[in-house]
Length: 457
Image 1 (tube, rainbow, N blue to C red):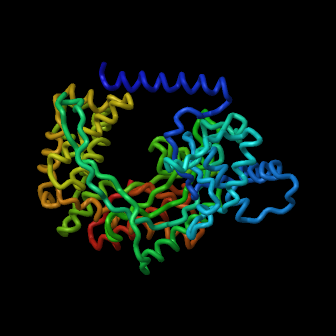
Image 2: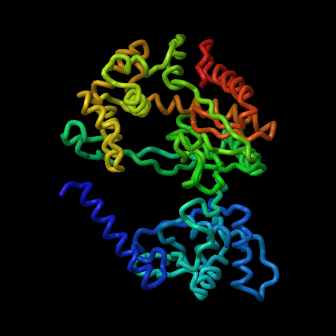
Image 3: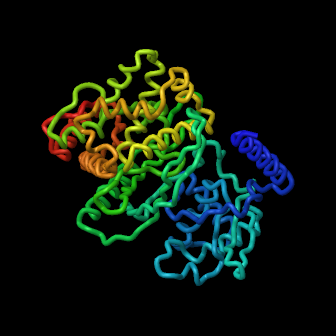
């Protein structure tokens, strides 16, 4: 049986088991308790849901007239995690754990978990100190604050606005290529949190992103997608560096409802205070930053030259392959050898096929084009900057585009106007489009230190 069929069969079996347990016990997920995760102290509730949580706390403990802020905030975070997580949550039930220095939650979480359990809102599986296993909890059907298919009122407040992670090589990931039908490999790297000593620059970035959080929360930022109810979006940003504070640094949103988690077609329906928005995008930012390094400009679209050499493709096919090539370019810039870049491209296709997205593989098969050929065409088209290919310069370029994004955000922070970055594009209320265009252009020229502008569309 092919691997995909095995995965589908396991998923179907998992659904049947869960449906049986739900019907028998009323538990939303009481099955795979070994698949648990720790509480995320950054998860919060939107104001309407926070009011629901506050009322729930008063219902659980009616004799308590006044609650300390640490208690209500810890209970809010607990509720947000229960609403958000589709997996059980790991919660130590030892006071000494929560009284340790640096803990962000109050030890009252133990009392609240016991109250929720007694009232049948959550299920609990006691821990076992002999095997060093913590207690795990999971919500039951009774704990249903709002429908879970859309944002049930989740917000996010970072505890750290600047993050440093180091890359750790874990060997190779092996897979069967959907194009060649051969076994291929891709370097497997994971990122682990690392500590760093704050610098004037990290403090400046923290100040910008903290102010940005407050600016966005002065406005209603929502997705108004046709046919669906309006739902709030998560806008909080963190700056994530890789290996040191001068590489990476891209800005990311979090949770399923983060602005950056939306598909490009969905972002058109973002509304700020009920007003329509527009998205402006740097065209070919990475390529143009590399040409700027050799004091040259690049005219036209950096991918069109490759597509023009493939006249057999129709306009729809070119659009699909262009999107794929944008990801392939990042693989070229982040790899240290061509084979790994090709492997990344083939793995991208493999992952798409696992998600039942066969557009790219069908087009490449139909026209007998390999990922290796596309890489060769990239090299030929951009031969003036070929020395930067396979040099792992991608993280350096990410650092530059994050500096550009921070300049843009800081400009609009000063005016209390929310601007939503999606790496190298920005979403803003339509009435500020001209102002955003001007600020993006000036920020690019300043950070990259070039006389050659980057087109914005």
